[in-house]
Length: 332
Length: 105
Image (cartoon, rainbow over the protein chains, first blue to last red):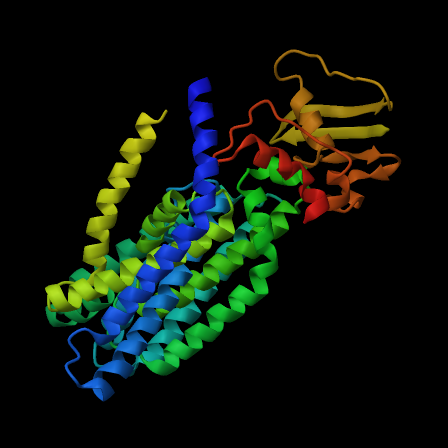
């Protein structure tokens, strides 16, 4: 125990000096990948390639940052680094909505085909669901975040079961449309939606910024946070609202993407070794951008769109996650 | 000075604290002694606002603890729990400096 303590102190001093440097390197990698993404294989058709790629890049950056920051905040609230906001069932709800409208109206209906209407409908329903969850568990005295998570798991499974029931019943051609919505995709993002999402996320960031200084203390746990003078219930409520908002907007924009959060948050904790959550948020955003841009490059130029980015990231992320579990187990 | 007036706490129908009243004087060391399940921790948790009492009040220097701002009371009361498992990579210095949070936030 004593040798372990000694090594961890000395290494943390060495490492903390390097945190800024690591973030800078990460930012440089992200920028380099972004430049590569914009230019590779454009072969002179700049007027065509650049605007389309820039839109894609912006969507990647937005969704990546939203997922990364919401996961880091969520993990600080729940004191758990293997949870992600997907446990609250928002992406299952998104899938259910997509399946249900194809089931009810067919794939040619404007609700399916028009990106704007579809975005508005999904976002609205996810926000309503968030609000209901939020009211259910924080209206009374017994606001308990784990109770809400449990509810989220139950609702999520429920939504998923109904969705797969409907998927079995619909025409196979229609199912292909639904299947296209089951994975996050950055192709074909409409600029107005991108702008709307960017504004929504920016507003969320500005409104909830004052709460972020409490994150480090919240990560100590409920008792310590109260002991240190935090109005625990109020701060947790606010931050949860921010998490709901970010997840809902990013999911409505690009599809189910919360799986990414778990990976990028944990990579960020490994890279940025300080306990300060703001640094972890910055790191996680950059890792998310690197993973998504890199994944998208691989999808476009190695696999020629024959696979999608979720598959690539889930493969890499799944392996990393297994490694993490094995490592956590041996460290006890 | 801490005054506890008629504090009761129920978990479901189980009565844990039944109308407890006592006064804790300044400049003294007070300890609660009792068998497992006697309600020592519950009373301490209520005193430090970790748990809400069903009835009764806890007063610090004549003012209800729930009437203080949370930041103000954090400067007056410090609690240390039996188990302190912290899932963060912290140096002792960083952990210690969290104690300044009520002043520095």
